[in-house]
Length: 257
Ligand code: SF4
Ligand code: FES
Image (cartoon, rainbow, N blue to C red):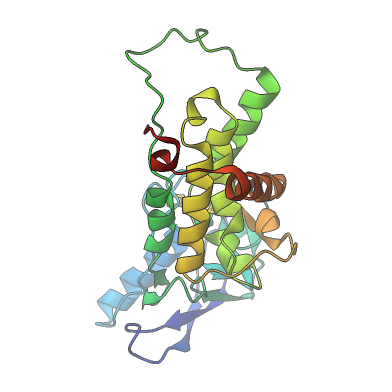
């Protein structure tokens, strides 16, 4: 099949960007989207042109490195998949495919489709670690957790930190990402030690990074490759409000963790 790729090209954050069109022949429907980009890049390199910069690593929906807005949708058409899991059979012969980077103030463009997502890392770091004394590796059944709670925590833990939720949100909100990270520990006994502090610190860092607020648009859940539920955002709001009203710094209660 033939497609026309319209790709956002931008040398760096200091340069203006523009769309460049690349007509491509002989695209196999069985190619992954990233394999198609590899082929385009080989052709560009052979012609002495600059290849398209794009992020990728595992290419199997695990690492969260990949991510582009494809025809206006974060990670492209299809539900519950990352860009690397998208295949060219999702497009038709003759289609025009428009490829853009994640667009958000907190994700400055590095080059072409590559954006700086370290803001998400800093939010994660602000959450700190879990201070539960775990000792050696405990027996699998030593800490009993009801199955529905364990399942919900695991659903939250599936977040791969790709940033599609931010790219999909009209407010560039990172609430789904933060909610997933707060939920996965708030639900489990091991996460109780710093539960309140974690919610406060992560929300504070999220605001510092310049992400917008949630306005219940639900685009984040629709485009999330792991289909993280917005129900976790409701939990984050509860966690934050309870922590705000009741958290006392260790020094104020005469102790420490
Ligand atoms: S919540 Fe979903 S879309 Fe957002 S960073 Fe995690 S996996 Fe990506
Ligand atoms: S390359 Fe790892 S999730 Fe896509």
